[in-house]
Amino acid sequence: MIGNGQRRRKLVRLGCTAAASMIGAASWPLCGPAVAAGVPKVSVSPGHIVLKNQYYQTTHALAGTGAVVTVRVGPNKVLRPGWPVEVQECQPDPVSLNDCDMLTTLGYDQLTKRRVEAKPNGSVTIHFLVWAPLPNRWDTGSVIKVGPGHPTALWIGDDPSHWATSGLVSAPVLIGNVPAPVKKPAHHKAATQGASGSSGDGLLGTLVVVGVAALGVVGGLAATMGRRLRHRPALG
Image (cartoon, rainbow, N blue to C red):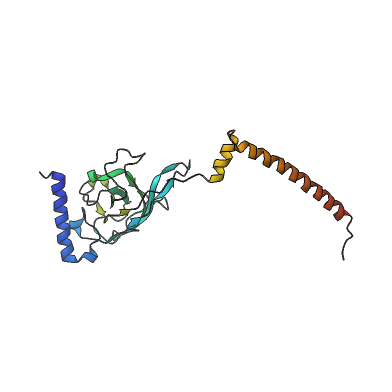
């Protein structure tokens, strides 16, 4: 038996297929709640993102992994001119707010940290931080699954409470692999072992003795050179 959500998705996909056949696939970069209002050009660059570690600006602690993308929406009749635009991550081919993760909603430009308003013709360009994978440690209850093998679609709109009529949906964005954890340098490990009383203590003591002896030799040479310089006649 097909549920109501699956039935709605099927109807939306059929409508998208029909629209694509009429206007041409090259002009069909999205499918979603705004199909009935026309098919404006929506692009997400890059379309296949490479995840990077993201850190909090204040504490510099690891926040998670993700990547910043550039979202461009062409002229349209959906986004209201002068209204701030928001972006959020969704399942591919979303049909309602239930298919999107509200915790990923970003109401400003990720790079400029300023709110971005739609232009008089509805067009807008905004930078968005795509979080992946989802769920993650700060969003354990995420309603969507994003990560390698699980693309995401982006909803761009100005009123999530009227999700279906106030926004547009991008084509799926592919997600790369999660970065491997950073390994500590080898010299850090050796220093730690020496300080903990392991076999590195003997080597460390030898290095200290050699260093002190070397400092004594250097000091003697410096004193000798200093005496010679003081007795050197001026040139010229």
